[in-house]
Length: 151
Image (tube, rainbow, N blue to C red; front, side, top):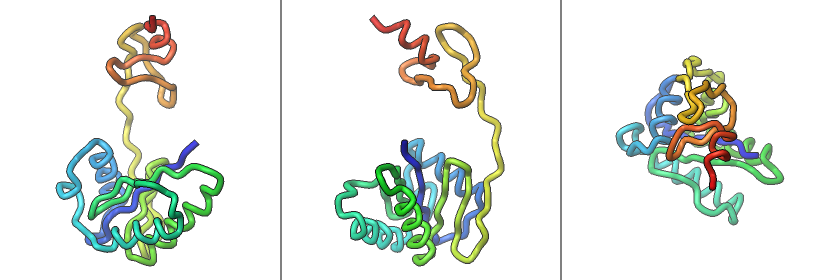
């Protein structure tokens, strides 16, 4: 099980809704420069992260953001490190699981919940309930429908 976090540029103050939009756009492949302003402190965060965990490998990063997928034996320590270091550096920390934005000197703020679009299985035509495992490529399918299509 993993836990995702995003460290976002602190060059411009963000609302929780703006952080959610930025996260979704970046996660969908948008160019970072179209979404956030560059911030040299992001590179400082990556350097501190690599110093703390030298074997972390590559993280998805740009001059304006870092995406982390935290798993392993000490996820609480990793989350605490990210919270502390992002705050020290004046960066925004966004939790996409619950839409909470942690900005330096401010109380945590939660993004406005948005309705999820209805997902319909392309094989059986039934609704795929939110949180239900499903496949999206090449077709949108319930997992059981996907397995029925396998040779």
